[in-house]
Image (cartoon, rainbow, N blue to C red; front, side, top):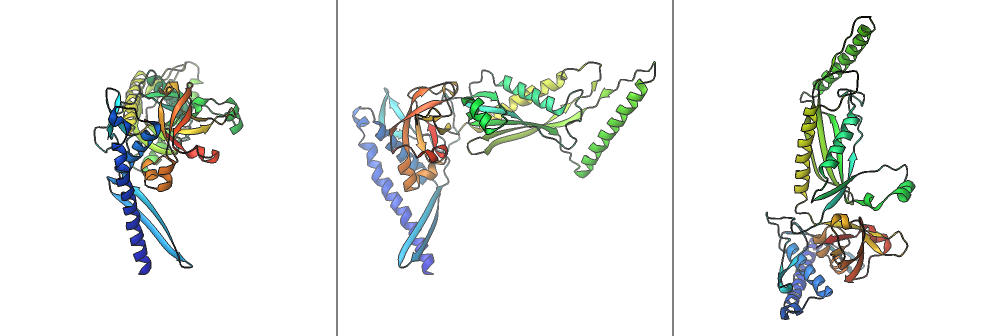
Length: 401
């Protein structure tokens, strides 16, 4: 019973302590030089961002996990706070004549009118064609094409559809024989934050095992038909040219965050490969199929883009390979990043979780772009603590605002 009381009291004490600190921070907003028409310093900007993030985290339901125990008469306690709020971007200042006011316009609120138009960045992604040996094997024909040929064709259609996009810049994923080859032959474009996976497979049957059995039977009949046609064609004066059978397929696209390896969005829709006449020469993809692929691809791209509409632009941190110890991110001119752009540096991707812990809040830093290339930008810290140690850099996150 005593242990339960200690846990309960610790949870309340932790919450009250955090609330007291937030109340103490609030006057900072009113004491900024911006109230007299001056520009906020980098340190003041960082404190303003921290304040707005704490307010957002505390403005929603908070879960407290508290634990305490006695060890030789010494009380040890540990509490973890998590917010149910939805983070939708770094707060921005309400400008008037290009001079920031003391009051902050919080763009992180969980409303339904979240639009990404105010951020002129493009998201970079790799495109991977998944080589999947499906149930019937890669030898099952699609006309006189293979499943992998169709998947590669769709991959090209997808890449072409992204050409000139205001939201995306994509490139095909390169395959390297080893980690060493990747290090030597790879480029900064290989560090794209996202990846699209394209997969083509037989459409799942609604009849379960019965459907799979039927598919195997159909495949066997098709092979038997092929043997019969070869026998018939061996007889002088007989020319037997059968049609390629139709095939029901499924076209699936998956969007993945490469830093966390978490799936962001996925959808699969049916794709019908029509019955086509067999000819002596390899045919092109049926026009009806090409049209369906274009329509599905456009639909997928729009839905994948919408899924990221309220997701902040976050990038990984890297230590420069040149040996100068500079900190870079995996975004550059292609993504729309320019010299002078600012980023909030945190120890992890969950900013609301960071600000609800003393150590996480203290580790937040502000950095700006010092130099930029096509797919990379060098950051310079302008406010907050020193850069994390080299071993922690890969886990750190730079959020654009």
